Length: 422
Image (cartoon, rainbow, N blue to C red; front, side, top):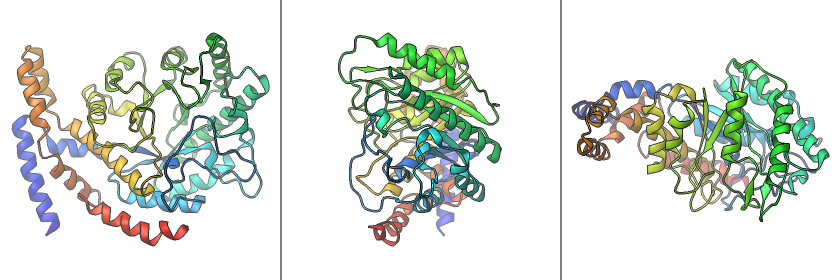
């Protein structure tokens, strides 16, 4: 009975979208190929699994909230992730940070990590039909406390982090080979100054040299893709960030790398969607980190708001879906962590679906005629079209709960699993 009701609503929606010039059936088929890279750090508040001797504060990372049930072990984190994947329609990926290896009882510092420390993740990914992405962890460490890592004027600190990132790229390539799908390795560093610096140039000279050394070793594109993530400001780097958008964009263009656009790493009034067609004039690929900034880079859970819709409208309008790597990047410990993952993942997929349901040819036709009234009218009509009926049908096709049914599952999981951890 439930399926019949959803199918009926979907068929009615198909007709309504057809009337406005959209093909809902084609949109559903395209959405099946959209893969999100789910970020592991939402599940444990960016703590990681390094043993005593590690340093879990500093470096521009701050998580707020104390909701019970944080994953304390790799096993618990995988358990939570499996629940998340069961509630997201489609086939997706996992995005790991370097501090999430399986290091045993001995503390392994970050300039000593090896592919073997992530063999368990590769085995798990193969078993679950997942692909992996990777990130170096240049934060929450004594050698990040001074505020500079790859751009530090202390040569020993700089060499430590260069070695760490080199090893992370090696691990990423290992993942790509094992899973027969390119791993995206992303570099974000917290380097910057809380107050006004004098020598901005000096740190950027050093960062460029460090990156040149890191990328000296090449890997096949089928194994590893490199990305660089900028930021407008961070905690402790309010006045100056070494790895700015301009710096990384210039480096990526000259070194054939990708850039990462994090939706929380720009000024709140900037239109991140507007950057898509600009950078794709010159870049082959792009990484998106989707979160939600509230007044600052606060890493709130992604929702289906105007900025998220606009971001994926530009991706779809430009025909860039197959050139964009989509990852989630938020961490909120003030609410159910598994629920936060699912809300964010479903919101991003809905934003992609919304973009796929645009009557692009009709919109282009009226725009090219200079009929801006019709363009705006159509865009307004789309806001009240029955996307929910299409989404519910897609969820049923992918064998995940439609509508609000996932809420009950998460509440039950919270009672049965999460709260029993504390």
